[in-house]
Image (spheres, each protein chain N blue to C red):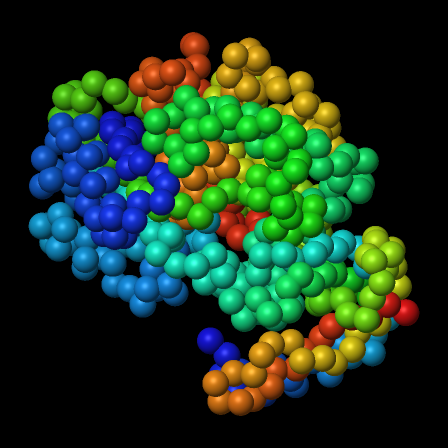
Length: 383
Length: 99
């Protein structure tokens, strides 16, 4: 298994003075400096990006990255919608597990704010089925359909959802790289306008720019030299139908449960051993479903449990969720998200998380979802 | 991108799910749309389970507010689903109306 030896993230937000590849360059230079390795020690690069081809007619990023880094090593671009980052990490980890003395750079980046919300919404819907696109469904719309089933089945309402954003926005105030660093009241969340009923603007992650990068290695020389190291103990991917209508369940994401099951089995640790988790909260409902699908909370109970705020810094005590602010407050530059989630766990486990540092965290989990649940990645670090 | 050939290919499939009855199993109202749907927003989208158990997704039309509920009976109908493409071909597809 590989060891993570370095992480760097750009600020997430509306970064109008930076292009996609300005962000990529900043993240590559940042992580190399952080890790104190030389560029030529990198053997392979996995690059996560979803939208550059659709939005800016910009493909063949592998070669552009070769130009930026000045190396002729293999570079692979990975696309799995919002799970691109998690899948890129998974492939890098597999590469390391199957090669000796190698070092991989995983980088995720997205440039979204150059375009209108309608253009970005349409581009993101490329990750939905043709029929869903034809019905005028958007991503908030797909999650709204899931939310309706969940709220109706377990007798919850929009207030239960609002607690997710309330918590994650508080965490965002503790993260200087977050897109939003502002507390919200429950009332502000509940009064925000609808995007897709019953989901509101403040149930939804924003359109953000940003990049994040990690270094994974099994090169003993590098491992000996670096200060902050975290073991990768599981990285598992599962998929499900792209169409919501073909799913067996509408009140859960099967891909999440399957990836989690495999990851926990492989890591040989228990759910209660996880003290810190980054969960894919693209919409408030998604964090509630994930807490159940990952096995942290019983099925149908998340609506009640979230109101106890037991996963919030300063309130809870054994499992803290989305300390980065999650996608909701830290921002959601699609390709960067999965890498940032794992990076946040790395910062927590190496005690570099600053104001949001969780005490005595030994194991952490990152959960990254693509589309409306068509891909899920669960990564467990620590030990 | 919507090409005339793509519309033609899709329309061969549409007739198989026309005129089918079923019930709403979930619904939403889309306020923030993609660029092709901006003119008609807000609009409701329903997930429907046909009596034969297969499911389909589409917009609900000719409805009253109280029709937007889980369990409501609907029927699939043929409607224009997008503004005409640059080539002028009108894309027809499935929508639903209350029964």
